[in-house]
Each structure stands twice: as structure tokens, then as C-alpha cells.
Image (cartoon, rainbow, N blue to C red; front, side, top):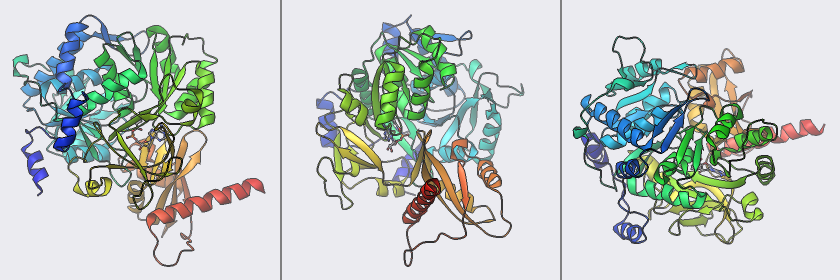
Length: 563
Ligand code: OOB
């Protein structure tokens, strides 16, 4: 057992991210790290903006509104209630909730109780949830009963079976059954005097989930100091102040709508957050009109969908000042369509849950906004663009993006192997992205060096899906690659060599789904091949193999089109 595990097993010690003393001193002196913590800023806003609306949730006609004072109170009830159930500050809690006010009250409640949320997406299923719970050494899970047609209680039961250390299951909304199998969020109560003092600002506030380019997702520990800096500075860049109305249309657990500048940025600014129950125009447009939403963040396919719908909708979208687009590459032609369709400012956002976030600025000219993915938040974001040997390349040349800075992690949680791969000895995070830098520090994303599929902003590890396919008795070998897709940006395609009884594509897709994975990870397309005909002599890497299969497939496709 490593020292790190000893510390985590102790459970109650605040988890820490370690920056070298010299950088800590620099980040403090520059005023990036101000010793603010999540509970402390929430308390302050509850006093300053007591009666102002903090959160609006629910569909039009059935909405819930929480003022800043109510949010604080509700968070206190939930936090104290969890401690009364036997949880102790420092323990980890997997949170899997959709875009409902309970997402925000629960997370704020965990902050108030010194508990550490580990965020899961609503699409995740048992394989992923069990992995997060184990990796985070979680002792509790908060989820829904029924939500969007899925019964999360079945997931909760499976999780308790697979990871018995998860002793507490809290269900938001109707807990169901009536047999006290689960704790109902609505009736949690406790003594607020049991809530701990504010945490160390350099301790870990929560665990975010990585896109997972190699195998399973890693857990990303973000500290109070570093994360608050990232959304406070984002507020300035994105023009968020107390008059803003910020809409969360993507899943609220994702780093983009959480902190770029996101609902946490909105809470910090004293603004109003509107949670859209869906990401499509049908759910969002009526809410934009009713709440006079000023800013929203979307992934490129949704931005295009909205832009088309905006030209035809009867809903008044005139309050919208900024549409942020990120998570995957927005190509210049698509950017142009967004600008003309939405009639508001476009802001490109190129970020990662590990830290670094780049924005085009609201006063940047058209060339920058359409053709770049922005520049870093902080003057102290150190960005290197290097060749395969680690040597810096000149501006305008494509290279690997490495970064370190005041809000980029120095290591994943509880994962020595990933840390050895993903960080240089001097603390730079290897993003896996290939970029060009333009004068002024603007970055243009060219692609990536690692094999994951960026399916409309959802990241899928090729290796993870190959492993699930290989578990099927009729699969001899499998290689999963990304294929350019007009709508999704990229879709996933699995090349499969079979053995014995040959399954149909639909059966293999059902197999992957049956392995307890998020639906977005099921291959969009399956291509059966006799062999991975490779011209290379001897052993080639999986990466080269995937690249060869992709190229052959695309060239066959274009030949078919030409003939
Ligand atoms: C955001 O975070 P993650 O952690 O889901 O994914 C990060 C990766 C990046 O390394 C890059 O490969 C890709 O997503 N990406 C983009 C992009 N924004 C993210 N690729 C091209 N163009 C962009 N604009 O996706 C995320 C986190 C915070 C803010 C925004 C996005």
C-alpha cells in the first residue's frame, strides 16, 4: 500500500493537491488564491444576496425557485442530515443527479459538511459508478428514484452489492418503496451545530471525472483555492455579474457548465442559475424567454441545432448575450453559422476538467472568435507546445499541449500509473491535445495525440470499449476508432474480428450496453473484418493499428463516393 493510500484510507484527513512552495507563494501573491472556500463564499452570498433568486429549476409551469438564503439553509439541512446519518467530514460521496435544484443543494450541502462530492453524469451506469465509488473510496451515493425514464434505485442496489463500503444511499424526490431501504433526501435532518468549521482552502473540495483517454476514468481532485480562482476569473472573462442569468443546459456535473464560468461562477457573482431539464431547444427556449437568460454554454452539435431553431422559434431569445461553445472543436464554418443564427456573441471555450481553460474574449475580433479556441484564463498558466521529443515548436506549428498553472492539477487521485504517464517531472500536465499557438497566445486545436473519441463533447476511451468487446466470446479482436461525423463531430466505430458463432452488430451493441455502461459509449457503428490487414512488419502498437483502420475505412468510403 502506498503512502497516498494510507492517507486516503484514513478518510478524514483533507485530501490535498501539492504544488511546490514557490508556486504556492506566487499564486497567493498574485491574488489568484485568496484562501476562499466553497462554504465561506456561499455563506457570504447568502447574506449579501439573501432574497435574490439563486437557482431556478423545473420545466415551465412547474418551476422551483430558491433564493440565496434558502439555498444556504437547504444546504445546511442536507449537510447536517448526512452527518447525523453517520458520515464524517472528509468522506467521499458519489453524486449522480440530473439538472434539478437538488443537484446544487446537495453539492452545497456536502461542501457545508466537509464531505467530498465525486461527480458522476446521469448517463453513467453501474460499471462506471462502481469504479468511481471504489476509486474515491466513497461511503455514500446520492441519486434519483425515477428520472428521465430510468430507475436509479436499481443502480443504487447494484452499487451496494458491488461496493459494500457504500453504506449510505440517499434518494432525491420520491424515495419509493416505503420500506426505508434508502434515505430520502427530503426528510434528512440534523443539528446545524454539528457542521464543521470551514475547510483548509488548499484541501480538495471535490473529485471531478476525467474523460479517460486510456482505460477507465480517472478522478480529478480540485481544491477550493484553485477551483474558485478558475470560476472567479472566468466571470470577468465571460461578463458574469449579479445581473446575469446563466443557463445550465449541459449536465450540471460537467466541468464546463460548472465552472466556465458555470453555475458556481454564477453563485459566486450573485447571479441567477437556470437549470434546463434538457439540452435541446424545446426544453431550453421557453426557459430562456421566461427567465431572460443572458449566457449559456453548449457543445458544437447543440450550438448548431440551437442556431437553426433560433431562426424559426416563436420564443423571445433577445436576452441572450453570449453563447459559449466548447467541449469539442467548433470548426470556423460552424462558428459562422452560430453567430448568424443566434444573433448574440460567440465565445469559444477550450477547457479540461484537469484545469486549463481557454476563452476567446468578448471583445476579440471576428478572426480570433471564428478561428481559434481562445487563450488561457491566467497570466500564470504556463503553456508549452512541443514536438514528439519534448522540444518547443514555433508559433503556427502543431505540437503537443502541456500545461501547468494556478488551477491545473498536479496529479490524479489515487492513480500512480496514470500520474507517471500524464505529468512531466516538473509538473506539467500532458493534455493529449495537439494545438498550434498563434501570436497573442491564442490556441487552435488540431486534434489529439491520444486515442479517445470526442463524441459531441462526451469523451470515450477506445481502450475501455475494446476491453468490453473482447469480453464477448465471439470477439477475437476489436479496435475502436473515431470517424468524422457531420452532426456529432466524431462518432465511434468498432472494427471487430469474430470467432465461432458470428454475432450481429445489434447484438454486440446490446452486449456493450449490458456491461453497465453509459449509452454514449455504445459503438455507433460496428464493422466486421476478417483481419486487421496491416502492411507494417512485425508488431505494431494499438495506436498505429487504430490509425491504419481509420485511414483505410475513410479512403474506402471516399472511393465509394467517387465511383
Ligand atoms: C471539457 O472538459 P473534458 O475534461 O470533458 O474534456 C477535455 C478535452 C480537451 O482535452 C480536448 O480534447 C477537448 O476536451 N476539448 C476541445 C474543446 N474543449 C474541450 N477540443 C476542441 N475544441 C474545444 N473548444 O470538455 C471542458 C471543460 C471546461 C470547459 C470546456 C470544456
